[in-house]
Image (cartoon, rainbow, N blue to C red):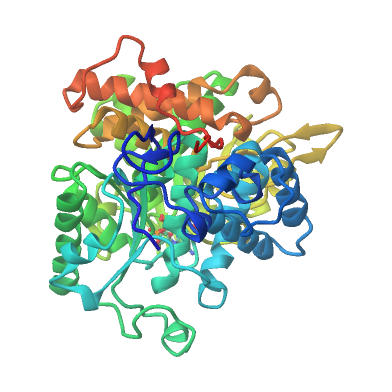
Length: 567
Ligand code: NAD
């Protein structure tokens, strides 16, 4: 197949090919089967008569031409007709491999329906079965066998204009643990959301899995496992590998935004700390989760008419999500006038050993700043009884941990307990939406990580909000790459949270939803990107000139999947 440098800017040819035939910025348009096998350019049966003549497609396609609307109807019928969500996932990924424009048109126009298929919860199952469902490589696998040569391996990627990399080492995939190289579903899915939600061009996105081994014995014994069958490298060996990867990525794609995704918490915090001031890099599990959760809290506090800095917050779980959320809440509370130590004291963490308290000898570094003086408490129920949180956030991966007794205890001292059960996928959620409403007589303000259907209770319909990171990271990414921002500081996540909260309207709140409808996510992403871009301009991180109307400028850069005429 021709190596085509894909650019979205089709240009008129004067020197090459037939008169009127368009070409890409720096290469001729591929033809014939090369064109049909190029998912960025393929239109399938929608190629016109003229294009079929000019591009050597006669005879290679069924003769009856159909429009993109007819193609969409066919895709919908096929995908909806599948028996399982995993079959729907395979069907959509197959489409993405054949015809990206059609894939994104379908996804964008039916985002609420298909986001749970191409992302959580179905993506979790897809990763668990990746060895069996794998058909065609997307993105790049960089393995321990590539050590010392990662920069050269990057040369194999045909596209120079990569602006966003989402990378995982597969150690903590959703709440499912170590899936090694099968974690690839996550960067692929997240980058699809960059494009669908915020219009980042598909050609600017690069999913990467770092195969540093796996400690999942089942996978190591499975002949279908896609990664190298060895245990994880650790310590200095691991750090050197990551360092080589980051440097090589920066050299190959200067100023690329790197999103770290689903790394184990012992590495995630360290890597973020090490590289946040050296690279244009963030960790979505830590920082993106924090922004979406803070936005949900701001919305919930509109219902209770309270200030964030007056809340007592218990986080069940003390890992990436919980500590990331706490750190951003602390920043937000300081903006309301609290000192940092005062703000920290309002956040309490619980890990698998109980309440995180001063004096515990077993605390990882990232938990220590939330280890307050208190008698040790073994479980969530006793913490709720003792600390009386106004907000309870679950980020533990422990299904059903928010029991009826715990939530009804909260409802005994609080009119509207704020309960966010964030663990993914749905099977790991700390409680169901219905469980939260039933145990609090319908008074809880609830949000979850994976989507729950609306709940009908006591003649009321309550719509649970989904604290979906997809509200936030695509818009942050768009803001960063549009401005050429060189770093992604914590303030950008604070700006993103405020921008997301500002998109929640009174009608959303009336039905109990603390996030906007997913159908509006492209507008929401544009608002977030604008807030992030404005921060980049005023803080001096931007490397392009500030336009007079930032929102219109941001919107003008968003990819909209439509077929462009090729002649
Ligand atoms: P992590 O592995 O870094 O942290 C998990 C934490 O849970 C650890 O601190 C662990 O000690 C604690 N834990 C485990 N068992 C426990 C128990 N029995 N009691 C109390 N605490 C216990 O993982 P993470 O990245 O923080 O993610 C945690 C969960 O949050 C996952 O299910 C993930 O899918 C979910 N998550 C949701 C969103 C979202 O909704 N937007 C975003 C990120 C993560």
